[in-house]
Length: 314
Image 1 (cartoon, rainbow, N blue to C red):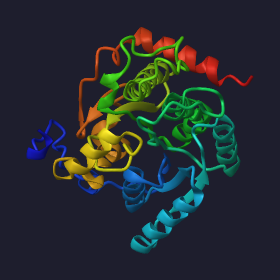
Image 2 (cartoon, rainbow, N blue to C red):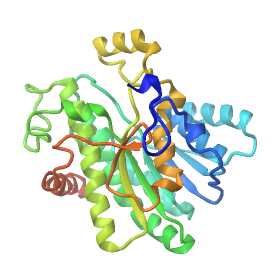
Image 3 (spheres, one colour):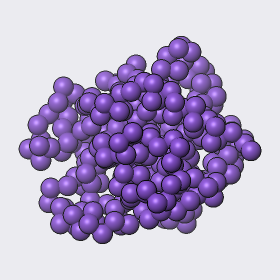
Image 4 (cartoon, rainbow, N blue to C red):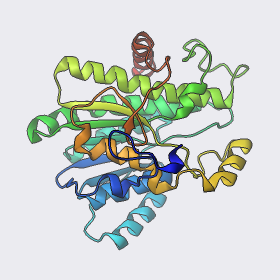
């Protein structure tokens, strides 16, 4: 159990914090986008990356909340380079506008951290008529990543520094529907299950990273793509689900804190040990084994094609 602090091959454990796993690393000259950076582990990820000299773009739905987080970090780290940009991942129009604005800024992009997510919410459709958890957790990040890939490729080529794409998944990917991804029932309200729909979206995060890694390797591009489980963390992510919320409140003594929850993200994004590593699933700052569905390459290819069909402008 993580609470005992057993260290894996990386030398880190589930008790390691984001600051500990990035100690001594210089991220000066790097630019990162962190989605969902105004709450939970997104805040700590932003702070720790900025602490190491990374220019962080906070991609947030609530710009005012993002600015408040930026101000708080700047009080602690006056020299931090942080910008706030609006991004609603449940809206493809918002994702496209964000990508266009980012490209217009002419900023480089070394690190793309697909961190934002919603969990176990009641059935709802996005602005694009896609089940909200799947739309926000997967489709929004899938589209964002595709739209920013050329910028990342250009940055990697010009800087001779490896680009890294990091998808935050969850151990909850194991609790998806029996078939994994319900391609023909994404919007089926009558069979909707809050937990399984969340699991489906988190499974999609892993499959996306794995298939993207395969494609980037084929291209010979100096960009890696990995996914991770940040751990069970005491945040308000489970606010839509009463049982999970109660467990979260009761479990603050054995759940990870935010500093520990952001550790694997920061490790995968910055640590030299992860250089050249792509298509892997991490947990507690070590490589881990995902479910058999998450390792199904054919399912990953099918999801890719399905995601393309949903994101092609109508």
